[in-house]
Length: 248
Image 1 (spheres, helix red, strand yellow):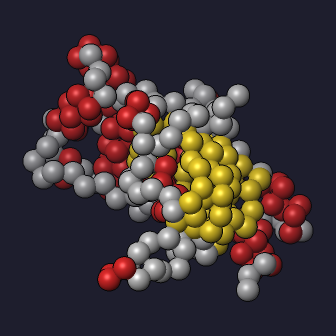
Image 2 (cartoon, one colour; image 1 turned 90 degrees about the vertical axis):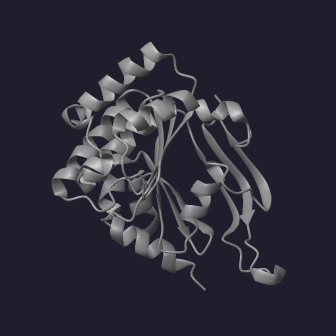
């Protein structure tokens, strides 16, 4: 079976102004996400999480190494139909409604109008936005805007979901709602990679986790394997050991 996401010895170094080279953001990172699996990507600020997501989304290219998504290079245009992307911070035009945004997304994915209408209603109702569908998104609360971003990521029925801080800025009720959604998507067989600072969400939602620190992979495995590797009883303690044990 082809992995949904595969990184093999991936390096990424950004150039500074005037051509000077900065420290690598990723240093020979290798990991995979199997079809139907949920992987939690965690690390401190500057660990390389955002770089991984930008590489997956083909916003940037690797300096070295090989990345494949469903067996294809991220630059293949056909992959856009396979991927649903939730950015950490979504920017919505001031006057547009969620229906306006869905029309744009539907056109980008060549969805027939009947399919777009059916899928839009399905997800707007599921995420409790149906009654607010004609309101400008800028009038939504933070939690509503996050749910709107999920609708836009899901309307074309992607097999692979890339979620950047899906719980960011949400209150406990909002976190619980998004957590249930991710569980439902797992149950539908979606492959999910989500990046988060909330380690308890990884323990609750992820099949496996990937810990990055200063651009290097420090651990890849299940939460229970993390506990066994470092003799800890919580994912927080395991994470702290993972970034300290081999830290120079």
